[in-house]
Image (cartoon, rainbow, N blue to C red; front, top):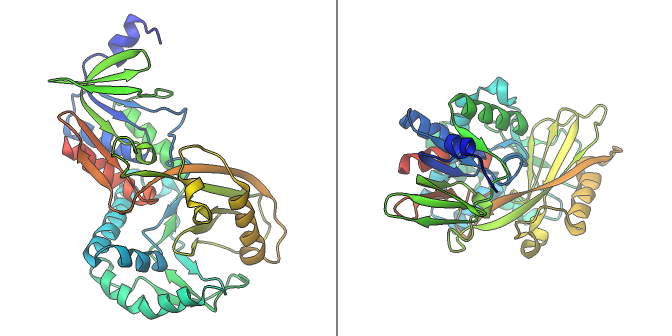
Length: 370
């Protein structure tokens, strides 16, 4: 990359803060830094033509965890850790809505539902049994019951009699959200460069040197907001997790409204107007889906179509219009990693598949470390 004097002078000289990753975390970090340091020069680098990982590729769920997922988390984390994590997700959603506005992100408070397949009687009964306990655990946060039993009015097939309803869930338009964040960043004089891959960085006494291929520049502070691509940064504490998604062509008379979960959040679907978006099933092939490569596999796409055909839309003809994938950041622990890595380098990663909910808050926390 041979740059002109003007390019070097305008974009890469006297840089105070460089953020790697222009997704939800990276842009919230940039906006928070602008609030804290009004005169600073802030540069955001993005390796894709659009935010690359999951920020523009997610399902647009404004959620903080289904009942079965929370019960699962309570088996692997302390009660206090689970409450703290749910509070962060909830606070992050409120922050996102406040910053951009519900109309701009097309927030729809339809509520969320969890359905249980007939062959998951054990999971269903466990959720019904533990629902009062989970509601008690969450009551200080929501000052009401979060989960309740509800009769299935959607004509799903092959599911248990009751759904679990959560009135606090909603859905957003992911594209509108990211466009609004990018516009706000640009309006606050934050420089954003796409198709820029950071190939290396080196710590010096007073700056970090950042390499973009054969071009190198200096920045006072370097912040990584690369989530699913942060394995090397964190010595493997973050593992990539690919999420495959499909969306149908419009379906006339579609009467499904809301966000829906199956099997501890491993499957999720929602309406987008009169289409169904359906994603998940990475638990069929954890090893294969631990990858930073975008793409689809037959084993997962076939399973998504099967459940769509047999359970979600059993009496409806539909066509799949489009398929895609996103890369999430997972780990053995669900707590995000927000930490200083060295004198001038920081990271905010491992969002655990909850980037829409928690990303805005993690971006702020990352900026506040500096």
